[in-house]
Image (cartoon, rainbow, N blue to C red; front, side, top):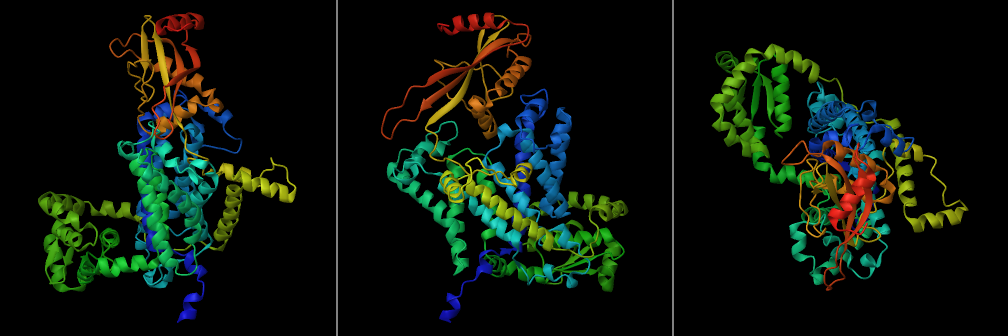
Length: 631
């Protein structure tokens, strides 16, 4: 017995449960939809030639190997069309409908979106692209999906049978290593004393007023908490990615570090406004839940409702393919895998009831028969997850029956639609050897890229092999084309130690001084006192854009932002009044050392802009006078 436990199990260390993969797929689709929803209000601002990033400039700024479908046209309607396709593809991915095809579409459109608006991307976007890329080589639709449900001969599909949930391949190795690479390489990049010795990194991170939350402001000065927590986070990111792959007692290590990393991401959610990044990370961590977790969830947590579902029988009208498919889909997505599905014609009394009610029939464990909406209520009550919706459906039974009658009278049309959208499938193939070889080669390439992002490692390698420091990976163009050039430098080598925001005093055509609110596309007037108010951003996309706008590497972007302001700003009380020009200031405020008083905010002018038809010198002179500056 003892010797058995001493034998390492490398397979379990890199095995993914297909049920966890299904939840991963659903969460991934949800995040893709959420990302698109966040971008919708400023779609024309970010993705059209009339916005702040015309295609001509973006194409020049981008690397030669980067291509975007959004480059095909500069009108916002084209961007809206591509976003709509991306949304439909994400929804289909959630349902597991033509999973492989929609994974490819989602990946291509997401990479295209990032290349069209590079100023908005952050670490969460890099991880989302990576998760979608590795998903191309995984059987995302093997469980709880339309694809798996509508396989005709399930008995001939051993990979779809319930007894085979563990899945191991080059792609599972790749996606698990990718998930941990975020933490591992981030730890190696956190070389500052704030992380490794002083323990002040979390203190500085929580003092970034442009991204912290109200909750963070309540405890950020508790040094007795922030210092040990800083050391804990760094050691967790360094050692956790190694120990989670321990081949001995791997399930135990997976449980421990899954909870540790999820708690870390929840901490990010509560304290920092960094968008969807923590949700993407939690989604990727779902793949580490071992088979024992899902088995226990099915056999213990859902045991009573599963027993109830096992006694359920769903009867459909046999000539109706639409009816049969609907029953199978309901069984899958309500998690009623033990329920029986039979043609109503197999029992005389059920066939008679079906004819009388013109309805499907559901029989519960007590032999009680239900039809129409009441049958749906019976199924929801038996669901281990969605039973909470049963009372809601019960309340709308009369309305539901009317809807059901309408569907019944048009079921031939629905049948034709289902034949196209939800066809029966003869087989469900898992990714083959070729795709796994591609995944393996790409894994080595991506890991090599990550290694060279660590300056100390890159120096050691180049000195060892006598390479030049500027040598590039042969596969770098491929990585750039696929959006896989990763750099996990979040809060590295230490967190930013100053708040930074834009202040834009403008001159109207009537000679009036106004302050432009840079965090909103509405550009409404906002009075700033003594040039010191910290900008409140509409969302994390705006924060990322405006922070980068200040940087030297993005200097040329400011002219397009200025043009957009001139064309779109309107006086809130008198819309006919336009801008004549403006100054753009970078306001900064250093975070004080622990226990020290707050520092004063400083302003540095980064751009002077005159709108079309107005002389730059005149705008400069008037703004300088109105601001009380010396010139």
